[in-house]
Image (tube, rainbow, N blue to C red; front, top):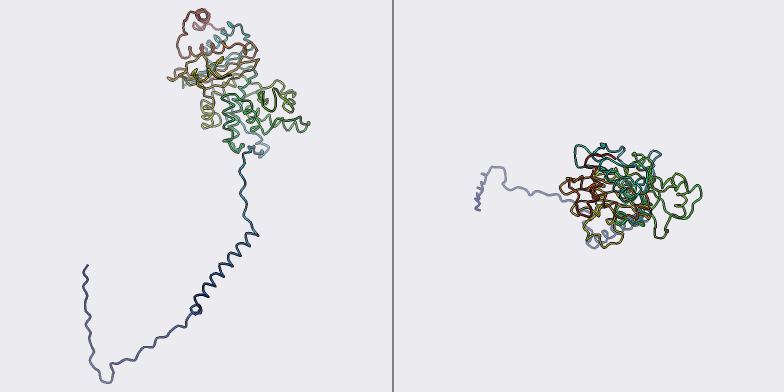
Length: 418
Protein backbone atom coordinates (compact mmCIF):
# COMPACT_ATOMS: atom_id res chain seq x y z
CA UNK A 1 0.00 0.00 0.00
CA UNK A 2 1.35 3.32 -1.02
CA UNK A 3 1.65 6.01 1.57
CA UNK A 4 1.82 9.71 0.61
CA UNK A 5 4.14 11.82 2.82
CA UNK A 6 4.20 15.53 2.97
CA UNK A 7 7.39 17.35 3.71
CA UNK A 8 6.90 19.96 6.36
CA UNK A 9 8.05 23.32 5.23
CA UNK A 10 10.59 24.83 7.58
CA UNK A 11 9.88 28.51 8.03
CA UNK A 12 12.66 30.39 9.65
CA UNK A 13 11.33 33.53 11.37
CA UNK A 14 12.77 36.91 10.50
CA UNK A 15 15.30 38.36 12.82
CA UNK A 16 13.91 40.69 15.41
CA UNK A 17 16.04 43.28 16.91
CA UNK A 18 16.87 42.66 20.52
CA UNK A 19 16.00 39.03 20.48
CA UNK A 20 18.26 36.17 19.86
CA UNK A 21 17.13 33.24 17.92
CA UNK A 22 19.07 30.92 20.16
CA UNK A 23 17.14 29.50 23.12
CA UNK A 24 18.55 28.22 26.35
CA UNK A 25 18.38 24.49 26.81
CA UNK A 26 15.49 23.07 28.92
CA UNK A 27 16.49 21.41 32.17
CA UNK A 28 14.73 18.06 32.75
CA UNK A 29 14.25 16.88 36.30
CA UNK A 30 15.09 13.20 36.91
CA UNK A 31 13.36 11.06 39.58
CA UNK A 32 15.54 9.27 42.12
CA UNK A 33 15.77 5.51 41.47
CA UNK A 34 13.40 3.17 43.39
CA UNK A 35 15.13 1.23 46.16
CA UNK A 36 14.29 -2.10 44.47
CA UNK A 37 16.04 -0.93 41.37
CA UNK A 38 19.25 -0.77 43.32
CA UNK A 39 18.95 -4.42 44.32
CA UNK A 40 21.04 -6.85 42.48
CA UNK A 41 19.39 -9.64 40.48
CA UNK A 42 20.58 -12.31 42.91
CA UNK A 43 19.02 -10.51 45.83
CA UNK A 44 15.65 -10.33 44.00
CA UNK A 45 15.70 -14.09 43.46
CA UNK A 46 16.51 -14.57 47.12
CA UNK A 47 13.48 -12.48 48.19
CA UNK A 48 11.14 -14.42 45.86
CA UNK A 49 12.36 -17.73 47.23
CA UNK A 50 11.95 -16.46 50.78
CA UNK A 51 8.33 -15.39 50.13
CA UNK A 52 7.46 -18.77 48.58
CA UNK A 53 9.00 -20.60 51.53
CA UNK A 54 7.03 -18.55 54.04
CA UNK A 55 3.79 -19.10 52.08
CA UNK A 56 4.31 -22.87 51.91
CA UNK A 57 5.19 -23.04 55.62
CA UNK A 58 2.04 -21.13 56.62
CA UNK A 59 -0.11 -23.39 54.42
CA UNK A 60 1.33 -26.51 56.03
CA UNK A 61 0.71 -25.12 59.50
CA UNK A 62 -2.94 -24.31 58.61
CA UNK A 63 -3.48 -27.84 57.28
CA UNK A 64 -2.16 -29.29 60.51
CA UNK A 65 -4.42 -27.06 62.57
CA UNK A 66 -7.49 -27.49 60.33
CA UNK A 67 -7.22 -30.80 58.44
CA UNK A 68 -9.72 -31.31 55.56
CA UNK A 69 -12.59 -33.75 56.08
CA UNK A 70 -11.74 -37.24 54.90
CA UNK A 71 -14.10 -38.67 52.23
CA UNK A 72 -16.36 -41.43 53.56
CA UNK A 73 -15.45 -44.88 52.21
CA UNK A 74 -17.98 -46.45 49.86
CA UNK A 75 -19.98 -49.30 51.33
CA UNK A 76 -22.34 -51.92 49.96
CA UNK A 77 -24.25 -52.35 53.18
CA UNK A 78 -27.89 -51.60 52.52
CA UNK A 79 -29.78 -49.98 55.35
CA UNK A 80 -33.18 -48.44 55.79
CA UNK A 81 -33.18 -44.92 57.13
CA UNK A 82 -34.63 -44.41 60.57
CA UNK A 83 -38.18 -43.04 60.66
CA UNK A 84 -38.17 -39.26 60.76
CA UNK A 85 -41.31 -38.75 62.79
CA UNK A 86 -44.13 -40.53 64.58
CA UNK A 87 -46.40 -39.98 61.58
CA UNK A 88 -43.83 -41.35 59.10
CA UNK A 89 -42.77 -44.66 60.64
CA UNK A 90 -43.37 -46.76 57.53
CA UNK A 91 -43.55 -46.38 53.80
CA UNK A 92 -47.07 -46.91 52.45
CA UNK A 93 -48.08 -48.30 49.06
CA UNK A 94 -49.00 -45.40 46.81
CA UNK A 95 -52.38 -46.66 45.51
CA UNK A 96 -54.70 -45.98 48.44
CA UNK A 97 -57.95 -47.44 47.04
CA UNK A 98 -58.73 -50.54 44.95
CA UNK A 99 -59.24 -50.03 41.21
CA UNK A 100 -62.72 -49.36 39.89
CA UNK A 101 -63.38 -52.74 38.30
CA UNK A 102 -66.87 -53.58 37.08
CA UNK A 103 -68.34 -57.02 37.90
CA UNK A 104 -69.05 -58.92 34.69
CA UNK A 105 -71.59 -61.69 34.16
CA UNK A 106 -69.73 -62.90 31.09
CA UNK A 107 -66.50 -63.21 33.02
CA UNK A 108 -68.33 -64.91 35.87
CA UNK A 109 -69.54 -67.59 33.48
CA UNK A 110 -65.92 -68.20 32.46
CA UNK A 111 -64.77 -68.39 36.09
CA UNK A 112 -67.56 -70.82 36.94
CA UNK A 113 -66.49 -72.94 34.00
CA UNK A 114 -62.94 -72.96 35.36
CA UNK A 115 -64.24 -74.17 38.72
CA UNK A 116 -66.01 -77.02 36.95
CA UNK A 117 -62.73 -78.04 35.34
CA UNK A 118 -61.40 -78.59 38.86
CA UNK A 119 -64.53 -80.59 39.70
CA UNK A 120 -63.99 -82.80 36.68
CA UNK A 121 -60.45 -83.43 37.92
CA UNK A 122 -61.89 -84.55 41.25
CA UNK A 123 -60.31 -81.65 43.14
CA UNK A 124 -61.84 -79.94 46.20
CA UNK A 125 -63.30 -76.65 44.98
CA UNK A 126 -63.68 -75.27 48.50
CA UNK A 127 -59.86 -75.02 48.49
CA UNK A 128 -59.83 -73.19 45.15
CA UNK A 129 -59.79 -69.42 44.61
CA UNK A 130 -59.89 -67.64 41.24
CA UNK A 131 -59.86 -63.98 40.18
CA UNK A 132 -60.16 -62.91 36.53
CA UNK A 133 -59.75 -59.31 35.32
CA UNK A 134 -60.35 -58.36 31.68
CA UNK A 135 -58.43 -55.25 30.64
CA UNK A 136 -58.84 -55.54 26.88
CA UNK A 137 -61.40 -52.72 26.64
CA UNK A 138 -60.09 -49.27 27.42
CA UNK A 139 -63.51 -47.93 28.40
CA UNK A 140 -64.00 -50.35 31.28
CA UNK A 141 -62.10 -53.11 33.03
CA UNK A 142 -64.18 -55.97 34.37
CA UNK A 143 -63.75 -58.60 37.08
CA UNK A 144 -65.16 -61.91 38.29
CA UNK A 145 -64.09 -64.47 40.86
CA UNK A 146 -64.65 -67.54 42.96
CA UNK A 147 -63.70 -67.60 46.66
CA UNK A 148 -61.74 -64.55 45.62
CA UNK A 149 -61.88 -62.70 48.95
CA UNK A 150 -60.79 -65.68 51.04
CA UNK A 151 -57.35 -65.33 52.62
CA UNK A 152 -55.10 -68.20 51.54
CA UNK A 153 -51.48 -69.25 51.79
CA UNK A 154 -49.66 -67.72 48.77
CA UNK A 155 -46.38 -69.70 48.94
CA UNK A 156 -43.88 -67.95 46.66
CA UNK A 157 -46.49 -65.58 45.23
CA UNK A 158 -45.61 -63.57 48.36
CA UNK A 159 -42.45 -62.60 46.47
CA UNK A 160 -44.59 -60.48 44.15
CA UNK A 161 -45.62 -58.37 47.16
CA UNK A 162 -42.08 -58.20 48.54
CA UNK A 163 -40.86 -56.97 45.16
CA UNK A 164 -43.41 -54.13 45.13
CA UNK A 165 -42.54 -53.19 48.72
CA UNK A 166 -38.83 -53.17 47.84
CA UNK A 167 -39.34 -50.69 45.01
CA UNK A 168 -41.57 -48.61 47.27
CA UNK A 169 -38.82 -48.34 49.90
CA UNK A 170 -36.15 -47.75 47.25
CA UNK A 171 -38.00 -44.86 45.61
CA UNK A 172 -38.58 -43.22 48.98
CA UNK A 173 -34.86 -43.40 49.70
CA UNK A 174 -35.15 -45.88 52.57
CA UNK A 175 -32.89 -48.27 50.69
CA UNK A 176 -29.67 -46.44 49.90
CA UNK A 177 -28.80 -48.31 46.70
CA UNK A 178 -31.01 -50.39 44.47
CA UNK A 179 -28.29 -51.80 42.20
CA UNK A 180 -26.76 -54.29 44.70
CA UNK A 181 -30.15 -56.02 44.79
CA UNK A 182 -30.51 -56.55 41.02
CA UNK A 183 -29.32 -60.15 41.26
CA UNK A 184 -31.48 -60.93 44.30
CA UNK A 185 -34.58 -59.43 42.68
CA UNK A 186 -33.98 -61.34 39.47
CA UNK A 187 -33.34 -64.64 41.27
CA UNK A 188 -36.32 -64.10 43.57
CA UNK A 189 -38.75 -63.46 40.72
CA UNK A 190 -37.36 -65.59 37.90
CA UNK A 191 -36.37 -68.80 39.69
CA UNK A 192 -38.14 -68.12 43.01
CA UNK A 193 -34.91 -68.30 45.00
CA UNK A 194 -35.63 -68.26 48.75
CA UNK A 195 -32.15 -67.06 49.77
CA UNK A 196 -32.55 -63.97 47.60
CA UNK A 197 -36.05 -63.38 48.94
CA UNK A 198 -34.73 -63.59 52.50
CA UNK A 199 -32.27 -60.77 51.83
CA UNK A 200 -34.96 -58.62 50.22
CA UNK A 201 -37.27 -59.10 53.23
CA UNK A 202 -34.39 -58.15 55.54
CA UNK A 203 -33.79 -54.97 53.55
CA UNK A 204 -37.37 -53.71 53.50
CA UNK A 205 -38.08 -54.53 57.16
CA UNK A 206 -34.59 -53.91 58.62
CA UNK A 207 -34.72 -57.28 60.35
CA UNK A 208 -32.59 -60.41 60.23
CA UNK A 209 -33.19 -64.03 61.06
CA UNK A 210 -31.31 -65.37 64.07
CA UNK A 211 -31.49 -66.83 67.55
CA UNK A 212 -34.35 -66.34 69.99
CA UNK A 213 -34.96 -62.87 71.38
CA UNK A 214 -36.20 -61.83 74.80
CA UNK A 215 -39.70 -60.39 75.06
CA UNK A 216 -38.73 -56.73 74.69
CA UNK A 217 -36.37 -57.27 71.77
CA UNK A 218 -38.82 -59.63 70.09
CA UNK A 219 -41.59 -57.04 70.23
CA UNK A 220 -39.32 -54.51 68.51
CA UNK A 221 -38.28 -57.08 65.92
CA UNK A 222 -41.88 -58.13 65.18
CA UNK A 223 -42.92 -54.49 64.83
CA UNK A 224 -40.23 -53.95 62.21
CA UNK A 225 -41.01 -57.18 60.33
CA UNK A 226 -44.72 -56.31 60.24
CA UNK A 227 -43.94 -53.07 58.37
CA UNK A 228 -44.38 -55.03 55.16
CA UNK A 229 -47.99 -55.72 56.19
CA UNK A 230 -48.63 -52.08 57.02
CA UNK A 231 -47.21 -51.09 53.64
CA UNK A 232 -50.21 -52.76 51.98
CA UNK A 233 -52.86 -52.62 54.72
CA UNK A 234 -52.93 -48.83 54.71
CA UNK A 235 -53.80 -48.98 51.02
CA UNK A 236 -56.78 -51.30 51.35
CA UNK A 237 -55.15 -54.74 51.41
CA UNK A 238 -57.09 -55.86 54.48
CA UNK A 239 -56.02 -58.89 56.53
CA UNK A 240 -52.85 -59.44 54.54
CA UNK A 241 -49.82 -61.12 56.17
CA UNK A 242 -46.41 -61.25 54.49
CA UNK A 243 -44.10 -61.52 57.50
CA UNK A 244 -42.97 -65.13 57.07
CA UNK A 245 -40.03 -65.94 54.80
CA UNK A 246 -40.16 -68.77 52.28
CA UNK A 247 -38.23 -71.92 53.21
CA UNK A 248 -35.82 -73.68 52.89
CA UNK A 249 -33.14 -70.99 53.25
CA UNK A 250 -29.42 -71.77 53.09
CA UNK A 251 -27.82 -71.36 56.50
CA UNK A 252 -31.18 -71.21 58.28
CA UNK A 253 -32.93 -74.47 57.52
CA UNK A 254 -36.02 -76.12 56.11
CA UNK A 255 -38.42 -74.17 58.32
CA UNK A 256 -38.52 -71.16 60.66
CA UNK A 257 -36.16 -71.23 63.64
CA UNK A 258 -35.19 -68.80 66.38
CA UNK A 259 -36.96 -65.46 66.18
CA UNK A 260 -38.74 -66.46 62.96
CA UNK A 261 -40.27 -69.37 64.86
CA UNK A 262 -41.15 -67.02 67.73
CA UNK A 263 -42.98 -64.90 65.16
CA UNK A 264 -45.01 -67.90 63.99
CA UNK A 265 -45.95 -68.63 67.62
CA UNK A 266 -47.38 -65.10 67.89
CA UNK A 267 -51.19 -65.41 67.39
CA UNK A 268 -51.59 -62.67 64.73
CA UNK A 269 -48.97 -64.40 62.56
CA UNK A 270 -49.48 -68.05 63.51
CA UNK A 271 -51.13 -68.97 60.21
CA UNK A 272 -48.20 -67.75 58.16
CA UNK A 273 -48.54 -65.62 55.06
CA UNK A 274 -52.07 -64.91 53.84
CA UNK A 275 -53.43 -63.05 50.80
CA UNK A 276 -56.50 -63.30 48.57
CA UNK A 277 -56.59 -63.84 44.82
CA UNK A 278 -58.35 -60.47 44.55
CA UNK A 279 -55.44 -58.76 46.31
CA UNK A 280 -52.92 -60.58 44.15
CA UNK A 281 -54.77 -59.76 40.93
CA UNK A 282 -55.15 -56.13 42.03
CA UNK A 283 -51.40 -55.81 42.57
CA UNK A 284 -50.68 -57.35 39.17
CA UNK A 285 -53.24 -55.01 37.62
CA UNK A 286 -51.57 -51.98 39.17
CA UNK A 287 -48.15 -53.12 37.95
CA UNK A 288 -49.28 -53.60 34.36
CA UNK A 289 -51.21 -50.32 34.28
CA UNK A 290 -47.99 -48.60 35.48
CA UNK A 291 -49.50 -47.40 38.75
CA UNK A 292 -47.54 -49.50 41.26
CA UNK A 293 -45.01 -47.19 42.99
CA UNK A 294 -44.27 -45.26 39.77
CA UNK A 295 -44.35 -45.84 36.00
CA UNK A 296 -40.60 -46.54 36.03
CA UNK A 297 -40.83 -48.97 38.96
CA UNK A 298 -43.81 -50.72 37.35
CA UNK A 299 -41.82 -51.16 34.13
CA UNK A 300 -38.91 -52.70 36.06
CA UNK A 301 -41.27 -55.07 37.86
CA UNK A 302 -43.03 -56.12 34.65
CA UNK A 303 -39.62 -56.97 33.20
CA UNK A 304 -38.80 -59.17 36.20
CA UNK A 305 -42.13 -60.98 35.81
CA UNK A 306 -41.78 -61.67 32.07
CA UNK A 307 -41.62 -65.36 31.08
CA UNK A 308 -40.68 -67.08 27.83
CA UNK A 309 -43.30 -69.71 26.96
CA UNK A 310 -41.26 -71.27 24.17
CA UNK A 311 -40.72 -74.90 25.26
CA UNK A 312 -37.04 -74.60 24.34
CA UNK A 313 -36.68 -72.02 27.10
CA UNK A 314 -38.08 -74.13 29.93
CA UNK A 315 -38.60 -77.77 28.89
CA UNK A 316 -35.22 -79.06 30.07
CA UNK A 317 -35.09 -77.03 33.29
CA UNK A 318 -35.98 -78.81 36.51
CA UNK A 319 -38.54 -77.06 38.70
CA UNK A 320 -39.36 -74.54 35.98
CA UNK A 321 -42.27 -72.12 36.45
CA UNK A 322 -44.19 -73.13 33.32
CA UNK A 323 -44.78 -76.89 33.41
CA UNK A 324 -47.88 -77.72 35.44
CA UNK A 325 -48.87 -74.06 35.67
CA UNK A 326 -50.99 -71.58 33.73
CA UNK A 327 -48.43 -70.86 31.01
CA UNK A 328 -47.87 -74.43 29.84
CA UNK A 329 -50.99 -74.61 27.67
CA UNK A 330 -50.71 -71.15 26.11
CA UNK A 331 -49.16 -70.32 22.72
CA UNK A 332 -45.57 -69.06 22.90
CA UNK A 333 -46.23 -66.02 20.69
CA UNK A 334 -47.91 -63.93 23.39
CA UNK A 335 -46.70 -61.70 26.18
CA UNK A 336 -46.76 -63.54 29.49
CA UNK A 337 -45.80 -62.26 32.92
CA UNK A 338 -46.29 -64.35 36.05
CA UNK A 339 -45.26 -65.47 39.51
CA UNK A 340 -45.91 -69.02 40.64
CA UNK A 341 -46.07 -70.59 44.07
CA UNK A 342 -45.72 -74.23 44.97
CA UNK A 343 -45.36 -76.44 48.04
CA UNK A 344 -46.22 -80.06 48.73
CA UNK A 345 -49.56 -78.77 50.03
CA UNK A 346 -50.55 -76.13 47.47
CA UNK A 347 -50.18 -74.64 43.99
CA UNK A 348 -50.63 -70.96 43.07
CA UNK A 349 -50.06 -68.55 40.20
CA UNK A 350 -50.81 -64.98 39.18
CA UNK A 351 -50.44 -64.22 35.46
CA UNK A 352 -50.80 -61.32 33.04
CA UNK A 353 -51.62 -62.42 29.48
CA UNK A 354 -51.62 -60.27 26.35
CA UNK A 355 -51.95 -61.43 22.75
CA UNK A 356 -49.96 -59.63 20.09
CA UNK A 357 -53.13 -58.26 18.47
CA UNK A 358 -54.49 -57.10 21.86
CA UNK A 359 -57.61 -59.17 21.36
CA UNK A 360 -57.13 -60.71 24.78
CA UNK A 361 -55.55 -58.82 27.67
CA UNK A 362 -56.31 -60.20 31.10
CA UNK A 363 -55.07 -61.10 34.56
CA UNK A 364 -55.73 -64.53 36.06
CA UNK A 365 -55.00 -65.56 39.65
CA UNK A 366 -55.55 -69.18 40.73
CA UNK A 367 -54.80 -70.57 44.20
CA UNK A 368 -55.26 -74.27 44.97
CA UNK A 369 -54.75 -74.56 48.71
CA UNK A 370 -54.79 -78.33 49.12
CA UNK A 371 -52.26 -81.16 48.59
CA UNK A 372 -54.47 -82.46 45.77
CA UNK A 373 -53.63 -79.34 43.71
CA UNK A 374 -49.93 -79.78 44.43
CA UNK A 375 -50.05 -83.29 42.97
CA UNK A 376 -52.20 -82.40 39.94
CA UNK A 377 -50.16 -80.93 37.08
CA UNK A 378 -53.06 -80.74 34.61
CA UNK A 379 -55.70 -78.56 36.22
CA UNK A 380 -53.86 -75.22 36.03
CA UNK A 381 -52.96 -75.59 32.32
CA UNK A 382 -56.55 -76.64 31.51
CA UNK A 383 -58.09 -73.73 33.40
CA UNK A 384 -55.66 -71.35 31.71
CA UNK A 385 -56.36 -72.57 28.17
CA UNK A 386 -60.10 -72.50 28.79
CA UNK A 387 -59.98 -68.84 29.87
CA UNK A 388 -57.60 -67.90 27.05
CA UNK A 389 -59.76 -69.40 24.30
CA UNK A 390 -62.89 -67.65 25.50
CA UNK A 391 -61.32 -64.24 25.94
CA UNK A 392 -59.46 -64.65 22.67
CA UNK A 393 -62.74 -65.78 21.06
CA UNK A 394 -61.29 -68.94 19.60
CA UNK A 395 -62.91 -72.37 20.00
CA UNK A 396 -61.37 -75.19 21.96
CA UNK A 397 -59.67 -77.76 19.75
CA UNK A 398 -62.05 -80.68 19.22
CA UNK A 399 -59.45 -83.42 19.19
CA UNK A 400 -60.84 -86.89 20.05
CA UNK A 401 -59.17 -86.97 23.44
CA UNK A 402 -60.85 -83.70 24.38
CA UNK A 403 -64.36 -84.30 23.04
CA UNK A 404 -65.77 -85.46 26.37
CA UNK A 405 -64.16 -82.54 28.17
CA UNK A 406 -65.48 -80.06 25.59
CA UNK A 407 -69.01 -81.43 25.89
CA UNK A 408 -68.95 -81.26 29.67
CA UNK A 409 -67.74 -77.64 29.54
CA UNK A 410 -70.15 -76.40 26.87
CA UNK A 411 -72.58 -75.03 29.48
CA UNK A 412 -70.74 -71.72 30.03
CA UNK A 413 -71.18 -70.91 26.36
CA UNK A 414 -74.96 -70.91 26.66
CA UNK A 415 -75.01 -68.71 29.73
CA UNK A 416 -75.71 -71.23 32.48
CA UNK A 417 -74.56 -69.84 35.82
CA UNK A 418 -73.25 -72.29 38.40
